Length: 290
Image (tube, rainbow, N blue to C red):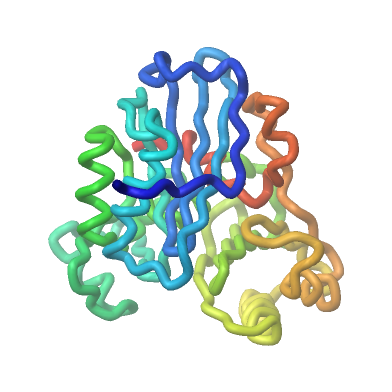
C-alpha cells in the first residue's frame, strides 16, 4: 500500500468543502525539497487553505510523481478537478529573452546559451506580458505527465515568471529606482530589479554559505550602480530573522524589510500563523493567468 506524506503545516478553514472544489482555485509551488499549495475561493475572494509538504532528503526528480501520489493518499481531494489549477516550478534552468527577439522554434537555442542540456525534460516558456519578456525553462517530463494526469487544466509556470509578474502587477508605479526584490530558496536566490517601472534585471544565484550569499548580493548591487546605504531590499521566501542569510543582510544592507501581504485578497484567520512573505509568489500567482 502506498504510504502517506503528511503535511508539515496544515491550515484549512472550516468553510472549505470537498464537494465545492470545482468552484475553487488551487495554486501549487513545487521543488525538489517539497510542495506547498493554497486553495482560493473566488466567490469570497478569500484564501481558505494552505499546506506544506517536505520531501525526503535527496529526492530525485523522477520520484516527484510518487510524492504527488503520497499527498493524494493523505489528502484525497488534492487531486479533485478544481476550477483552475496553477503550478509554479522552482529550478535554476531558465533564461529570459526580450519578447521582440523571441521565436518559439528557437527556444532550445536560447536556453542552450545559458543552461546545459537536461535529459528527460521538455522546454516550456512563459510570456510575461507585463514586462515584455519570455522565460524559457526546462520542465521534467515525469512531473508534466503526472500533473496533467491529475489536472488536465493545469497552468504551469516557472517560479521566476510568477515572481517577476507578481511584482510587476503589485508594485506598478509604486517603486522607485532603489527597490531591489529578493526571494530566497534553500540553495539559491532570485533577484529582480525594476528601473523606471520596467524590468531591468533578473538573475538567480546558487550559494552554499552565507558568505557566498552576501557576496553575490553586494556584487549585484554594485553592478546595478546602487548604493548599499540607500538600496531598499524587499525580502521574501525561505528566510526569517533567525537565518544566517538574514543576519548578513542586517549587517551589510541598511534598509531592508519583508514584503507586505497583498491586501487585494482576503485570508482566513487560520492562515495568520503562516508567514505570508515565505509564500508571497504562491499567493499571488493567481494574478498571472495565461
